[in-house]
Length: 257
Image (tube, rainbow, N blue to C red; front, side):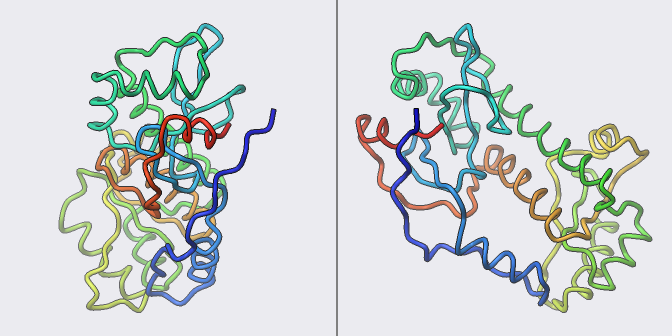
């Protein structure tokens, strides 16, 4: 059965364009103006693009589990909160109540370690995405190669392991700014919430400390997976809308599969 679409939100929420004038910059502006399907967080009532939220689904035996790729069959519920907020909602029973409304009386079992399961699922989704982009030839590894790509303006996204040295980060960040015509801006690559060991295992390479994406579409896909993880770990929600906190009945009307 089809569920009713969410009400439209203001289109004045736009992602800031990057300094570098590129095809990707234009693509980002278009995407900001047309963010795609919206969903509402069952805990806060805030609307946000579907890709920035996390879908929760239930297994046949009623176990509530994270569905980071939003592909599990059946009805789903969406959340866009940080880990501390999820832990609080779980402890106070708020999550159970919101899920009961979302799944309309279905048998539910909330695992006590749901916050850990969510973090693991979002981390795996990011690592899986990086692995896919590597196999597609969109990821550049190795300091020298990254420096060359960055200075030439071909690096769309620059990432550092959490345990990368400050000196190593600064050198590549400077090369990246040169290639993006952003010298003096202080703009830097993104430090991942993952160390070199995790990156090396996921990518099947030794000592992965830095990496760059040199394809605009690939960079956007990685940024999307990374944004969801950082939102959960740090409480940041890119392109979050202000939507009113809805009443339980109103939330029921606006839930989406």
